Image (tube, rainbow, N blue to C red; front, side):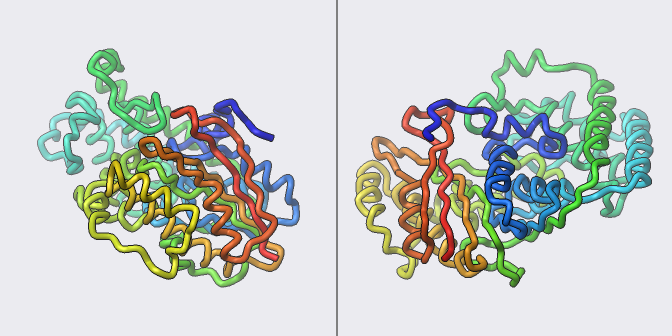
Length: 406
């Protein structure tokens, strides 16, 4: 049944109030409700693959339901995040995390004289993210956190999640449309105040994290860094289902929204690192990824997409780079879908949450092209279901494209 409403309950917004699912916000994330709905309608599914795992929504739902799920993503920060969200924590670990958080706050309050020696991440135009009066107390928290818990462990992971939440809460980031932007000056001036409040608020974030971390996860969810477009997945046992949402063909990059976390936690060292990662990802556009499109050549083995050819030519009349972007996106998706077919058990099912796109006056029926490609690579019983109207151009919707491996 067509859904002509925006349905915020089918987006990341529904996740924000659901424990671990809301630990770190990512706008492209989809709702836990969709995953639960799929698993309830197909109770035979026990072993799941999510090859574009993002914040780990599919894996966490599967784990909470006692199922096995393997997660893959090309972004190492997202794999770390998924592992932390899907992990189990003992009472002793939670108690140690709480005790360490209190020590961290005490040290952060005492270390105001160390500000000249504090490490600040090399984010370009960092003042867009944080004014100086917020950046310094955040840096003091981070310095104290690494002093109190220097080595990787479950306790440190939970503290870093709380720190990530503090980072974005006290930043100038605004989330009032389909991707992240920066608040205008008036909003920046009215946000919060004293540095002591920032430091004390870290404790509140820790308590929120610990409340959700105490719940036991009965299933088995694993997460791996991998490039899913070429089938470079480590596990060999076939899966009952793929439940995923690949990047949309809309030039919106995960890197932009994740940049603050990735710089602070050491996953990015310089701006070029972000561009390189985005270039490797499907649909990436950040920095040098756009420059590389100018010399990109399609892979001939994955270039037979009849429905796409006239659309690419039409977009090229306005922008050669954008036409190459769309071409590369579906070239990569073709390669991915061919490899995924081999990973499924007989009677296995795939569920892809995708959105259509519009470039200039050219509407790209992404859902129909996915259906064509699934048929090409051996899937049957293909179904396209529109699930909601997206909060952007009036022609844009979100779909679930599903199919079976017979």
